[in-house]
Length: 323
Image (cartoon, rainbow, N blue to C red):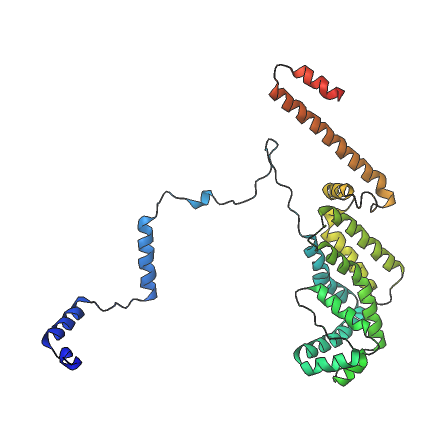
């Protein structure tokens, strides 16, 4: 029997027609109707007594004296806070001093021009490498450290950078602009080194922050004594904003007690970082904290001993005192 005879058979046609009647064509449904049907089906099984608002924490509870466990105080990321100073606060120096603003804008515009050209054109990068002997770099917009590193790279080839700029068809750097960049890097170096140091993930602890802040302040004070020609306003802005953003870490601030104890307890630092005029004060803070901890430990031992042997409290106290 041929295939055509099977298809043309009456019984086969009846089978196909019956199968078509059993199947329903799909209904077209808009998205809103579909969402409503899903929502209606969900509400049928939803318990009205459930209230998720009970589990939501509207605000962080204050620690109580009788709490058995207490979380430490929240601390902002020191590296991120330091990064905000060059990323946001450096512009304040431009707004305060016109001569600084003119030099800054002129020098940075020429640096940005060569960075943009070399990052977009492979041929320009080859010319830059051929003339200077160093590959071109471009800063990352979200990381100020890369901006600092790119300026440092330009200063390392300051003898040949103008020749490269001429071949690339860009404006050359004037001598006063190069001197400004040198002073700018020298002024920004303490912050760049502090960010690089504190953002490490090994051997970096809370006790490293206070000595790093003191180190930055000492370097900035020495730079200010040298009477900078161009970046004097920038040094003032850096000092002001370190004091503002790290106000709680001021050694005269009572809130700096935890950071002081962390630094003094760090074996690498101890009291080496403390200024001479504040060394006696820091020693008193550390000794007072040590004595208080010793008393708390003795009290906790006495309490635990009384709980374990309630019939002999006096003997336990005598043993602890003798020890």
